[in-house]
Image (cartoon, rainbow, N blue to C red):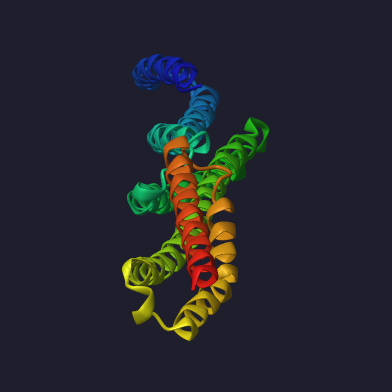
Length: 276
């Protein structure tokens, strides 16, 4: 449209040159005796008025087009930059959806996702600017359907943000459950090692130095700890789904070792009590 307007303005310039020629012609005619040029002067004045109106209209159209072009230029520039950044974050985020949680490095993974979330928050002002420019363009010309494009961009942004939040919640949940498992594991393992040491000590001692009641008390403590072992086992197995094979095998191996140690210690005490 601006190119077409340039052609019109070029024609206006040519027309203006012709008006100047007419002015010179009328000046010559006015000097000729007994020759009336009033009608021609009146017509020329109307032509001049029409010309000035046309020039004014062209100026108004140019301002409107240049304003629209400026809005489009800003929209194209900002939306292109925004979409490139959004695409980058989308790619990084989608790769995390197929990721199986490696429990020992879960804190590091949470920080990475938190950084993606920060990048999305930094994009928010640009999105608001895109929406603002889209509304301005739409107000100038509703036929361009700019709001449809803006809505698509907004939907992509919201989808990426929601995905990041989902991944973040998932990792935080695993992290909390892994922390609960570790706390329970450390507590039970500490007790198990201490009790095993006492059991081994008693099993190696001379029967005359062992009090049967002490053995029964120790056995009772072991029996009472079974629910704690079962609870620890449940905490570990609840982590199996969605975690890396290495993490799952490490938990399974640890739980198996604890159960074996617990059962072995229980049998040893029972045997020692029967022997006494």
